[in-house]
Length: 298
Ligand code: SF4
Ligand code: ZN
Image (tube, rainbow, N blue to C red; front, side, top):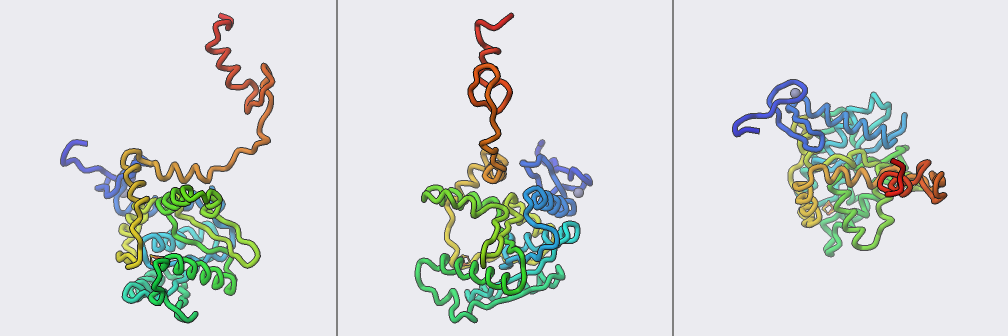
């Protein structure tokens, strides 16, 4: 593009505010939000993330990812026919938690979604009481426990969280390095529950952090820009960001391939020429012989 030239929205020709290299599309602030919602709706259908008539409990903190999650689920709830409510946990992290609770109230009012709130203090402690270096692991454990118990005791079928492609990829690298390969299954778009454990869904698993931020801004939704004061610096996200800058679409392609349906091992046959195991009538090796072999018929 020449200097000074501005891109136009592919749909309405207004000035574009976002160019998504992965989709080779530029969009304006009016056309981006419905585009984003359609992408999520497509993924929810394709990966069977939500079933008809399910009662969905969305975890909200007020951060951009959970705000994008709640608004998008609300937007697609009538066409996909499911019920949606929100659950916010007041973790007791001083000013951060106070602002976070305020934003969740405002957001749910705007979206006309019922907001349920649980205070961690009701269980006898808050995150501010945790003085160890493991504050995030205590906090993560408390959130998982409370979401699960609240969902089960209040008749919800699934718990939705705002995990995005960046989160899933960063966690993938961390866990792969520690040898926790089984972990990939736990981050799939839908992890079925068992016994007292409620099903977990991640409808934004293919959306990037950047897309979520643009969605929240262009939909003019309230959100909390402040990070939790305990948030650790994530070097993996910085590395992933650098790879994405060199290979546009890397994040989404990687995460999509992580959850691609596995080809059944039983989907094989025997090559009709050599008899070795093959996925097609004639195996690739025999086809290569036919193509490049010196003895092939002219
Ligand atoms: Fe909890 Fe804050 Fe750690 Fe997130 S960053 S797990 S909210 S303590
Ligand atoms: Zn437009």
